[in-house]
Length: 263
Ligand code: LIP
Image 1 (cartoon, rainbow, N blue to C red):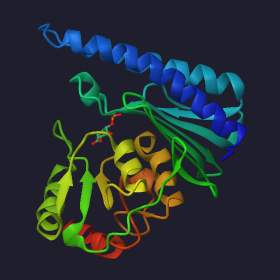
Image 2 (image 1 turned 90 degrees about the vertical axis):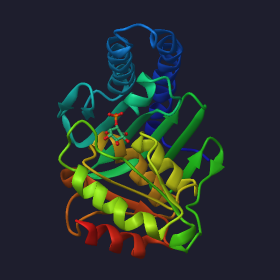
Image 3 (image 1 turned 135 degrees about the vertical axis):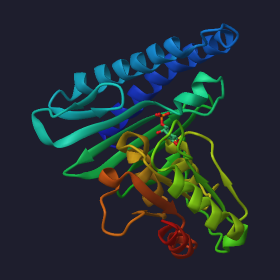
């Protein structure tokens, strides 16, 4: 399947940043035993990955805008297009030597995500999508799962940490949802949670208090794999509210009902 020139550019940037992160990840494992831990080292690895991506993308498309987790927002001459980038989604996993993190890059055009790449470099799994073209992992086409019974379904979420205000609502979500399903996972990388919904591994994912760069590429991936992505509160903008529900078609309604009643 042939993607656009922009998609190829995004894949190139994600692979290049991924290589740099894999090299640093090996080092992180050695730093766990030091009393200071690998915190500063990981911050540098994260910033370096964003630098690499920015150099690749802005070098080729200097007029596009930019929204990156590390370097923030920069409008660009072309107000209709911007890159939305998380160079290292799953930073806490990376910091603790857990191989579950990814590079996430999306391209937005006139307010709509048109291409997305999520690269799980530790597992060499490249998720990619383009509007109207479908969703893929490496060469394999992705489809959301067909499971339609809540009690057989597995869901993923992110549980707020470090005193975030969204914790009580998430605990309510868990209390209402867990008795109805086969389990809830909290793996710590939103981009991969969405990729796993697209790949039919999870039936759904939701999170409150999430940032655009964590989910921009994954939202399109789920939609292009035949799933649904909606804000937790109807009518809200996902990026502004930072709260979303993504799922296969079959459990979409019961999942939304539970999560919308919780808070
Ligand atoms: C993290 C997410 C994680 C979520 C955290 C955080 P980071 O992104 O992917 O799943 O629960 O709130 O946003 O900070 O590792 O890029």
